[in-house]
Length: 305
Image (cartoon, rainbow, N blue to C red; front, top):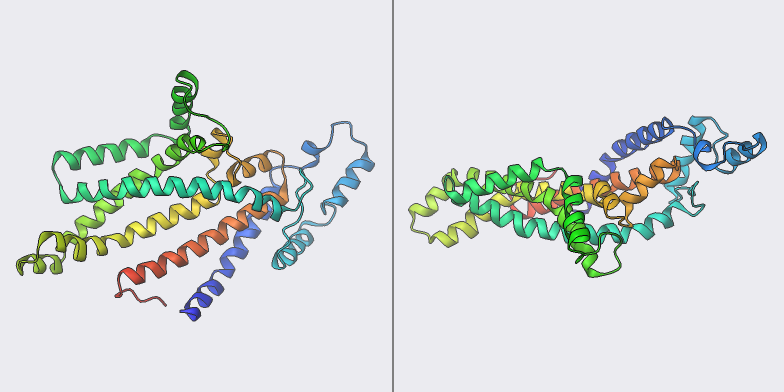
C-alpha cells in the first residue's frame, strides 16, 4: 500500500510542475502589481525598490526557478499586499474553508444520496420525476443567484440570519446551503444512474431469484456497488471546495481561501495566487488518491496499479 501511495505521488509530480508553471505565467499576464500597490505619482526610485523587495526585478525564468526552489523547502514567499508569509496566510484562512466545506458536503451527501437512490429504486414514478426535475433545476440555478436570493430573503427582508463572516453557528447556514445546493443535484444524478446500472447486473437478478430478501439485496449487492461513482464525484467536488469556494465565500464575505484568492487576484499579489493554486493542485492529488483507495476497499475487484 505504501509503495502504491509513493508511486502515485511520484506520478503526479509532472502535473504539479505543469500547474505551477501555468499559474506562474498566467498570473503575470494580469498586470504589474506596481499599478495597484503604489500610488500613481510614485517616484522611479520607489518603484525600483518595490520590485527589488518583492523579487520582481529579476527575469521571469529566474523568478520561476527561485519560486520552485523555495517551494521545495516549504517557503512560498511573502505576500506583496500583506507582507506576511504566504504559508501563514493560507494556514489562517484554511480552517474557515475546511469548516464550510465539511458542513456543505455533509448536507449534500445526506440529501443527495438518499434522493438519488430513491429515484433509482422508483424509476418512472412520481418520486423519480420529481427528483430529476429538482436535479435539473438545481444544476441550472447559478450559485451566485441562489446566494443573492438567500441574502435578500433571510438577511434583508426577514433579518433572521447573518449574511457575512463566520462569527456564529448561524453564519454557516446560508453559505453552506448555497454551496451544497450546487452539489446535491450532481450527487443525485450520479447515484441514480449508478443504481440503475447495478439493477441490470446478473448478480442482482441471481440474488432475487434465490429468494434473498429485498432489503439484503439492496444493502449487500446494490448499494455497495453503486457507491463507487458517488465516492468519485464527491471526492472531486471535495477537492474543488478545499481550494476555496470562490463564489460562495465572496458573496458571504467568508474569510476562507476563496475570498483570499479573489482579493489577491484583484491586487495582483503574485505569491498568494501561486501558492493557492499549488495548494489546490496538491489537494486534488491527495483527494483523488484517497478516492482510489476507498473505491478499492468498496469493490475488491478494482485493482490499483
